[in-house]
Image (cartoon, rainbow, N blue to C red; front, side, top):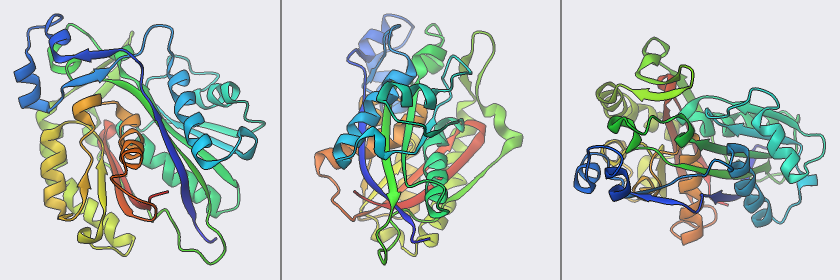
Length: 315
């Protein structure tokens, strides 16, 4: 019951980059309109032969390598995704097979854009309870598969990618590296962000989501800090779901994390749903914007109008 920590992170994005100018050839929009409304310049798009479990496996392999571990060291694989095409085998099982993880517990977590922080909390609880020793926690989504590329209200937003973390028990006597989760939802407003239909398509009520995120979430993000015993001013970084710069920047400002680096990977990657938080965190670590032991708030929100956040210590 000593708690758990993130041992290492990793991320992966497809090679193909779609610029705003490319999107403007598909629908009636422009680079200036997209940048001013959502702050996105580019996004990465996976090909038809790159399923979501492949994106997830690439990110997980990088996290394992960074931790100095092998697939045999893992006994739990959790994949947060809402874009898996097949129901069985689940994405986690397919990732485990790709990596060669022997006999893990393997589960998918579908909380859309808040999926990674839900999965991270689940891994933390599982390790604390002694039901697992080391977990791979992955956020991966191929939003291009569920996007109507003739709908300019959604196709300008999305990108594909994956991010992963290795979670393990803290050494005896060490402080927990993953703080208590604050999570919840507004299920009666679940219609505000949807991936539904046959074929499934992403749709949202943008103004409803914007108002909810910028007004209701700042006090909840502060509560996540309080549960970790930290004031927002003590945070080294804030990694929010990378939905839209017009949401990220006011939310971060109202949180009051005045000394923190604020992740803005949405500009380069678009909205990658469950992948967005681990992808942005991994890039901050890779760039040296945060260092080992730094306190970082992770806060996911979106589909189902669900949210989940916790303060973690950087690997």
